View (tube, rainbow, N blue to C red):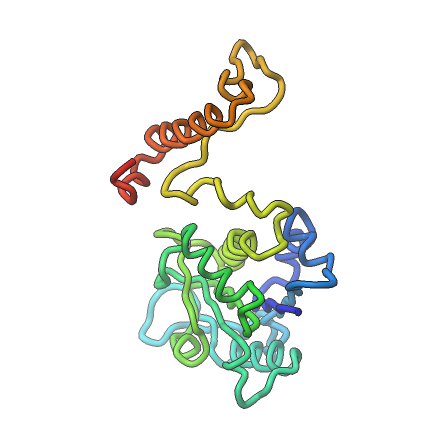
Length: 252
């Protein structure tokens, strides 16, 4: 099964390295014979505007600083660059696509939300392709939001210069939970935030690094000692660096 991910952006090459390097690079380039496959499709917004880059935005009614992305241009990019190009039904494309826009109004993105998003949209159980709309300038005309956007996602209480980086972060963090993306399914089990805290301290060779040695429990070969060390280490790491996370788990 193929899951297509469409990205509406001002910049055609912004996602080149993202789709070619690392874990997700392998996912987008190596199609599997079974399971869920992913294809990234970039839609450059200015190509769907008669004036190109110069016609994508305009000054805001009512005054104010910055420029606003026009709803008709974004609509044209969505309908022609995604719906028509992707072969979706013109009359009921909303049943086939889920449109996401990174924006401050969205719920804040975190580990549980990434897991839930992956189950909804990046699994064999999902039945819609994804569309990400990457805003720029001062923002996007509210009417496009009202008529076409299904979900808003915020990375936190700060502003980026555009939605491209936010889209990459959302996909990178969520796609890790899609079956077969990571080589080892257990990679997402004991990592930071999976259990209301940080991951335990990690060690590898050499056994002695500038006088600091590997904890003896990890060299003992005793599963119970190793497990106890990992739990205590995770708790200590969380208390030291992110005590706020323990508020979610008062028994810790």
